[in-house]
Image (spheres, rainbow, N blue to C red):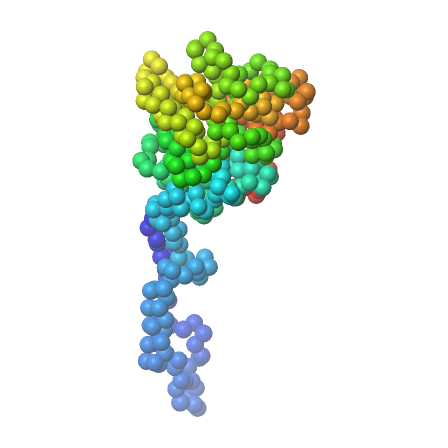
Length: 355
């Protein structure tokens, strides 16, 4: 990014507004001028020094009006470096965003900060605008994994751009596992009411949540639910925890294969979730899978539409997912209606501040 030096207009160095009045005829002795050749030489040297060193010096705004965003270094910031920076006890919390999702990212981060887990968060930016914005406010917490997609085409659910955006998810997660880290993935249209890492009982390969509305008993099975009408389960691909095991890597590789076998088309406007479910079902006998409690991780179709159930399970909710609704404005309104759009009054709690 270019750096601009805004120079003040220079006054005529030889017109001094504070000059003394002309000497009287009684005193013909001329005043001593401070603009001697030596003084001018010193001033010239000072200007040269400032010009050379100011790009590397953080000069307060308004003195020389020098601005240097210093964002170019993030172009070469690698996933390995980023994970080393944010990883805590071998675990990271990941989200994937493009620029239009930054308000949701901020809302999600406020809720995570309240659980004191923000230092573990790594934002995988899908465009340079997001990469620079996050690292400008929160250095080291965003990385970009090439190639860069057309961010504008990824906004509309069901579009080819949205498919291409979400289809990169398993490959990103696989790279993290291969570098030896456990990873919790979240979509950013979520809000934490508790700490999900405390819900990870046992030492299973893959943890996930049900995307179905029907109410389960509090002591429901943690096995992969049976297939539905479409021949596969209905597991949500928006909240997943994986350990760096052979089983978890197998699920991700199969997920990638399923996406390749079921590409987006105008007649079949798919997304990544069906492929994730096929991958789980086809690897269930080889992988240690764990269905997280419905009361702690309810789908949006249950939490936002069944007030009785919400009241009965009060105190058990850990992550609220704002799904079963399409559109940025609709999601924001729903969060506001339920007191979960935190950025309005609590932006100062986010590592990014108000964006």
